[in-house]
Amino acid sequence: MKEKKPLSEQEKVIEINGLYKSFGNYHVLRGVDLELYKRENLVVLGKSGTGKSVLIKIVVGLLAPDHGDVRVLNQHVDQITYKELLALRLKVGFSFQNSALYDSMTVRENLVFPLIRNQKKLTKGEITSAVEEMLDAVGLLHTINQMPSELSGGQRKRIGIARTLILRPEIMLYDEPTAGLDPITCLEINSLINEVQERFHTSSIIITHDLTCAKAVGNRVAMLLDGKFERQGTFEDVFNTNDERVKPFYDYNFIQ
Image (tube, rainbow, N blue to C red; front, side, top):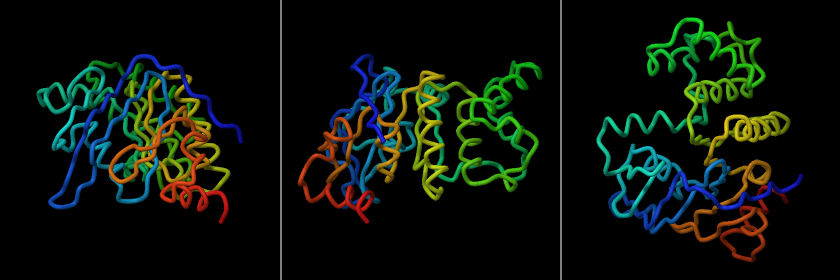
């Protein structure tokens, strides 16, 4: 499997400087610096409990930083009004680990829901066209009238991504996109993440423990160690080390 090539640095869509976040005496983020560039796939790695999910929640304004600066699409997330924050969140799509589909709705209805909630002026024809386009983009147009319970885990992941994409976000956040999937389906999801990047020109942060996924989709990789991103670069840059905090992560994925 070839390592994905990095992009040349260009416009920053997320810029984080000196970010700190603690919960009581538990210091999670201890001076995080991170950039996401336009149309880049950035993989964020780290052990459970290292603050990856906390970081993403701060990016979308669900948690406030203790210190530091967080800019998303040139807006300071902790300084804008609530109305401005809601508008910003529409430009940031979140693909949940469990797909977060509504079990009582068909696939069509799952995709229609965010559209009619956020874009009230669309006609029925425009809604139908948008739903069919997104399902076609993830290769699941034929499931349009099915219920989530009738789908495989991989199909639910794809539908979850389609539902997120239907609002045409500029930034995608993927939370463990290959978790719980068989190896073949993992490869399909990796390919889909790359297809989304190319077709919809998204900038993405992918949180994962799956190094095969990291190598396949990441233009750049950042590893969260002791509350900071101490190793960033290509996949080989990050893992070409004898650092005892890093080697077990690689060995678990590729040697065991």
